[in-house]
Picture 1 (spheres, one colour):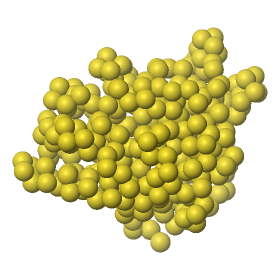
Picture 2 (cartoon, rainbow, N blue to C red):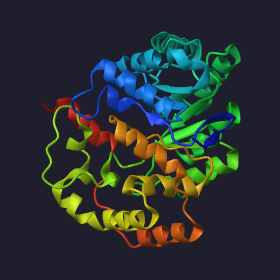
Picture 3 (cartoon, rainbow, N blue to C red):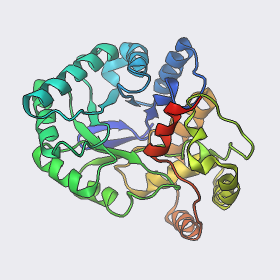
Length: 322
């Protein structure tokens, strides 16, 4: 697969968001199947794997660690932590202890990219950046990043310890970071890693009206999956199908190729739980849009209204649902 740069970190042009192997999308694959899928992704050219301590309360890191242990020196692993509100020495202790626990689960002595999972408004980003800088000096992490960060937070943190990447939601259905954050990443030499690049699978065109989602499946609370919004968003899917027919590609591949075309430091991390999805999504790296095709998509998007969204507040509602 083609490669891209996140700061100084070289990774495959499309990574693997491993969260769905531990929670978030209903019934889980068996452990052996999850490990097989991760290893299959590597065979297909993926060298960038994303996890977090919070995905399945460490379960996901353990899966990723076991799956990638035989090829650890050939891949980049990113993980994340939600930082509590301690400051000073307590902050340093908290972050390093949590990192050590992640390293144990990941079966490695370092992670390539360590994200603050969300910016904690109670802690100055400069203090977090200083702690991350210390971990870089120790060799426990090679780089660090923020998630869902605002432009000011990115600038302030980067001034203390340069960021490797910012990971935030980005897709044709959620473009809030397109105006300021992505250009800022380009200005500062920071990579941008879109999570949910296919809008939780919506842009694959495989989810119609009348579907029922159970358990901890986030599609129960993500409003774009309500029947009325599925119907209202059909023009977007029609556009993707039309362009896909012209390019010999699927709607998901067109969606990913569109963001890859935008900037060369964007590396999406779709989640995948079937072999055909791995082949399809990683194959998007070979779908090259011409400038004319890209402009056709941009013009169409400017005329399409998107209905529904995905928010942390909505996803939090899952905890109280049976």
